[in-house]
Length: 124
Image (tube, rainbow, N blue to C red; front, side):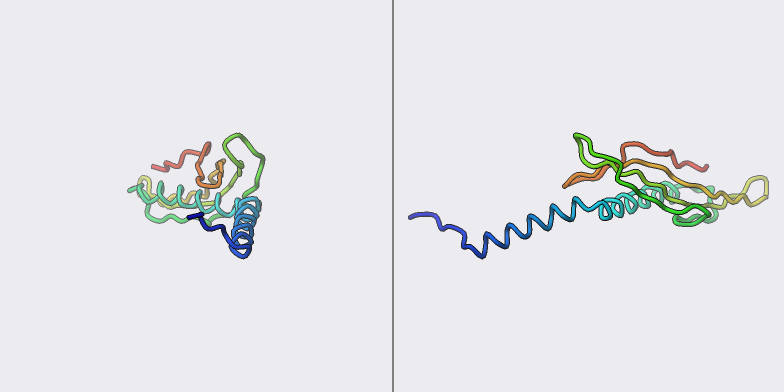
């Protein structure tokens, strides 16, 4: 028995899905949003673990968030991000408010995203 061949409609759908996936991954705006979301998760995870903080949040402070595709490497597309965050802590009975910005570089591939460089977030 001969294996069945895909129909013209099945091939067309497969091609359209592949083109859509490539277009999505190639869109700088999408990659920038993914990298900003990853940096927000990174900063949030660091601040959640700090027992000295009385209040904290990402997207807070005077700075604005920014992301920019800066190039390609063997590992994927590089995206530089800046994410504002703020926190409050107490020292010697006084409240201290910190207005910070995390700077990082992410490498984005079809299947993965990783933080390849960035600021250390350890306020305590």
